[in-house]
Image (cartoon, rainbow, N blue to C red):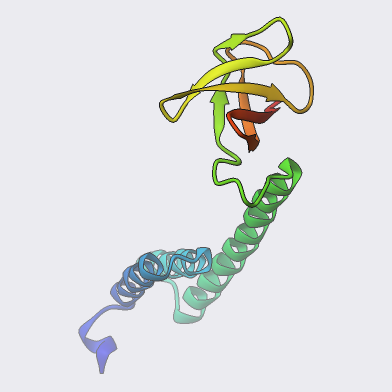
Length: 147
């Protein structure tokens, strides 16, 4: 039997490494939650708890990690929705700094090695302040303040 060769702690840690390897191939947050649960199961085995305590601790840690992942992804999705980004603009969401503000309220910056004019969609531009790109119209960046 495998448990006679390896201790339960080693089995938990091997499971953790296998799950992390699968996560690197697939790239989902939920496998990280499972790996966290397996790690907690291994830690409880290290402290000589019974097998039912190990599975209970692993289950609770996995559940808490999945809930945390859900709220993390939900908060991230909500932030992206607030920006109202143009899906056809690949630069939408990038952060720039305005180098110069003109008298007419426009500005200029260097982005991707080129000089661009900048217009703010929600207020006036301020020099050396970070802005998020919403859209591009020709050679003009339409930005929003990060405030």
